[in-house]
Image (cartoon, rainbow, N blue to C red; front, side):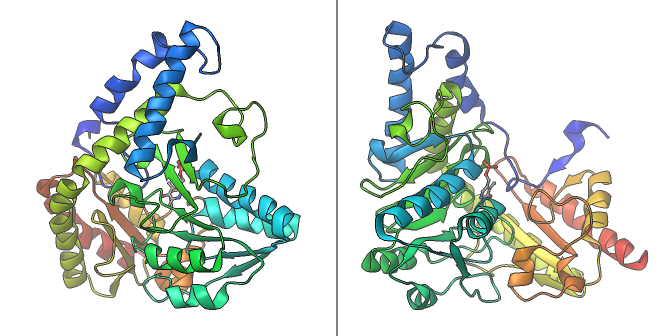
Length: 387
Ligand SMILES: *Cc1c(COP(=O)(O)O)cnc(C)c1O
């Protein structure tokens, strides 16, 4: 089977770089290559482009340019948000408590674990309902005066659920506690507004919205106490030392601009395809559950568990049939262990090990969806009978 005959249904893991984004990036590799920190003409050209990209990103998320910190990826943004805030808030007001949800991406989860194990922070987990959603009133109940940072994922990468972030932001603001959201997945589909949502910190990663891999951003509200994690030069307001990756940053700003212009139109084509997948799979495949919220979910996201199915075997058989899907989080190798997210929403391992995530994108066609729905029931049946 040729590469071009394969069907990509894993846009939550990564997306192709939009041609317009690539076009915007190219001059910055070879023509405008100065170091933005340099005094001379070459440096100024690069700096102008960098600051223009910062203005664009800031405007799109309703922030000030000085509140946008460019990083190397969504993961780094989450690390800086948690670690940087935890250390600074401890120093400023002796805050040692970190409040997160159990359905965070590993970029948040594992950072919080390390802050607990190596730095003595107390990490507490909020309850989630069966859709993986956080109840704002629980946030209010769990908050303490010594909470250093609250971190809640905007839209879940594994199960697609969109959290009531604006309500949670309002509660954190009322109590004066820093609030971070991992919007890496959400920003590909929803317009972001740090004012509307009462955010102090927000992580973005370009490769989830048709930008290049290896570049991200963190919104840091003006005046928030936060320490750098990567120390070095004075770049990025002293919060992230290291010469900026100008071409990739240009790419991210262009990708976010296009996403904001097109996301509504994209959603209008994605939602019917997503709903077709959900409806057909639940109807045709027995012992199947939709994971995540039935409608408060990302427009491109369909995720399931099949009872008694080996999820990895399912993915491999789909791959052989020409369909690239995922079990949820992109890094699942080795011994099968049920995902933390699926465990947190109450699924036993007999269900959770049989997970499948189908995420659509701007290149997905209804023919792709038809072809997928044609083969999936047979493949699930085959993995069940081979057990
Ligand atoms: C992909 C993803 C990340 C990590 O972003 P990278 O840019 O790949 O490091 C973090 N959080 C969520 C929700 C994601 O989907």
